[in-house]
Length: 99
Image (cartoon, rainbow, N blue to C red; front, side, top):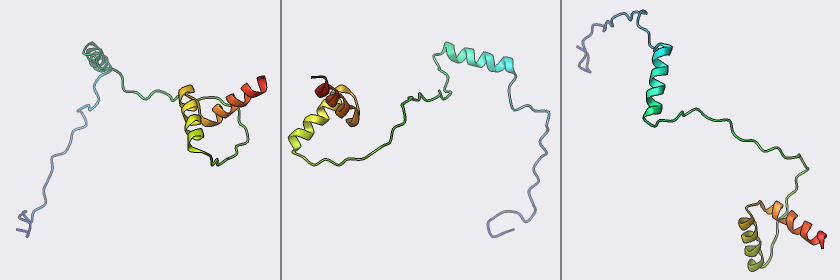
C-alpha cells in the first residue's frame, strides 16, 4: 500500500465504446429548442456588434483648465445632449458660425 492509502496496483478503467453518440440527433435538438422557446428561453448566441461608420479624421488632444462652474456647465450640456465632448464643442461652434 502506498503512503496515500491507494493500492500499489494500477487502476484499470473500462474501455469506452464508440457506439455511444454524445451529440443528440438533429430532430432531438429541434425538439429541445422548441420546448425551450415554449418555456420562455431565448437564444444566447452573440449578436454581431453594431459598428458606427465615421469618417477617419486626424485626431488631436486638448487639456482645458478653467473655472469649475463653466466646465460643469459644459459637461451638463454634453450629458443632456447625449454627445461626446468633441461633438458638443462642434455643435457650439456651428451655432456660433450660424449667427
